[in-house]
Image (cartoon, rainbow, N blue to C red):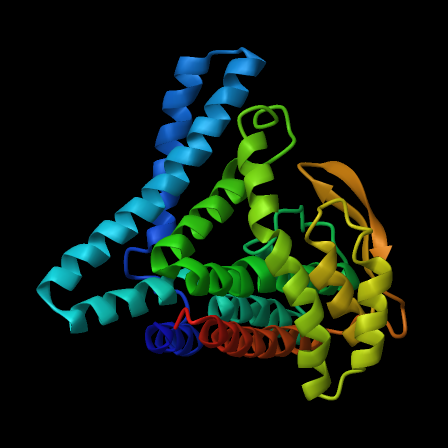
Length: 318
């Protein structure tokens, strides 16, 4: 099992998101849109019916992702064990997003280095859910660092965790849950009822991976000369400040390592949302912090896959 996981991991680091090839996550997005439309027609305007529809949406999407992946791999195994290994490797590759996250964050960094704040705002809007058009340079940097820290969990550590736990099928089921949350897991009027189940399921799925990430990240930062002790200190102090039960863990560790303060006022759909401050302002945010965050993210991923492998061998899962 570990051979195809490592192979898929390396493919992700080298190739990133295959933009010209049909991606399972994009296909899942289309499925979610179709199911949402059908379930809304059935549920009507009833809040209770929409909540029930949200449960059905979450279960159908995650179940389809697991079942389809399992069926495809069983079919290719019947043809050839080598084809099965290749299929597993590709699904692992599809489940991970370290390279694409670093590439998109790197584009924001380059725009800032070129002095083009408008371009940096547009590029940042591709990887964050908040409004970006009024952010100053420090706000852009904070937002980019926050999204790199958060996505270390759902783009790398959590998929690896579930792949080691239950193979590519469980990894793709996790990606379905994560995609559901990004599409319908909002507290606005449109999704408060329909999206609640997807949001809660995503919180549950990321609970342990977020805490694993929060512990691994200071160690990873220490490899690059960051203050690991400060990373652990800020992690312990600020990890529970975030409204999300999971996002504060990687954000606090990253803020401590970089010596910057995250959080503050953000805007979503024109509405101000006040987030608690995470970290200490040892220094002002700098554009280079975005690249440092990406480097820490990738190193955290390497530590994660090695630790998961060691645990799998110890428990006889490998």
